[in-house]
Every structure is written in C-alpha cells, then in structure tokens.
Length: 98
Image 1 (tube, rainbow, N blue to C red):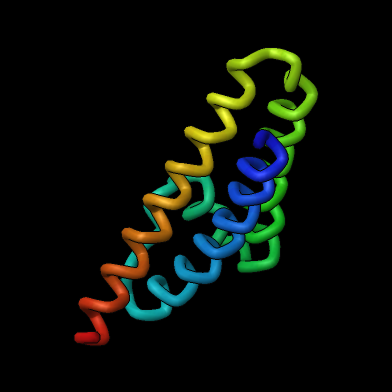
Image 2 (tube, rainbow, N blue to C red):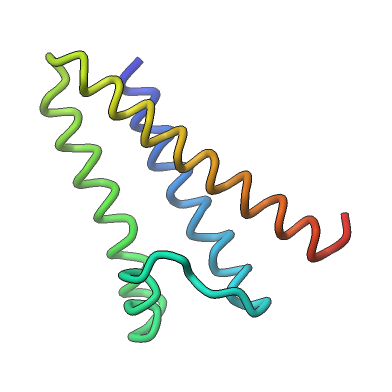
C-alpha cells in the first residue's frame, strides 16, 4: 500500500507541475512561494527542485516504512496532491469553459 501511495504521490506531483505551467501560461501565479521564486530563475531549475523535494520526502517516508505513521503520511501527501490536481483541472476547465 505504501508503494502505491508514494508512486501516486510522485505521479501527482509531476501532473501538478504540468498543470501549474499551463495555468501560469494563462496568467495564474504559483501558490508555493519557493517554487514561485525558482520559476523566476528558470523552468528547469524549478522543475528539478519540485521533483527533488517530493522525491526526498518519499524516500524519507519509505525509509520509515516499518512505522504505521509512514503509511498515513504517504496517503495524506498523495491525497493533498490529488486535491491540488483536481483544483487545477477545475480551474482550467472553468477558464476554457468546458
């Protein structure tokens, strides 16, 4: 179950990134102040940082897999990213009047 949660988390993180780029191209701004600042330095650096941050968090959770709290943390993080992706999709659908 933890593997699925962490894989889902990282896939959702990448999807969040793609949707964020689309939204910023349409005039929105990045909500995360760290990623927003990194976007000012260039998309590749911001992309690498975003993926690396979540990958490191996933690795830390995986290393603590013997504790039940690691599963809870993985599922909560995946749920948060799923919510962010749904938020992006809804806002883009409203923008495009789908």
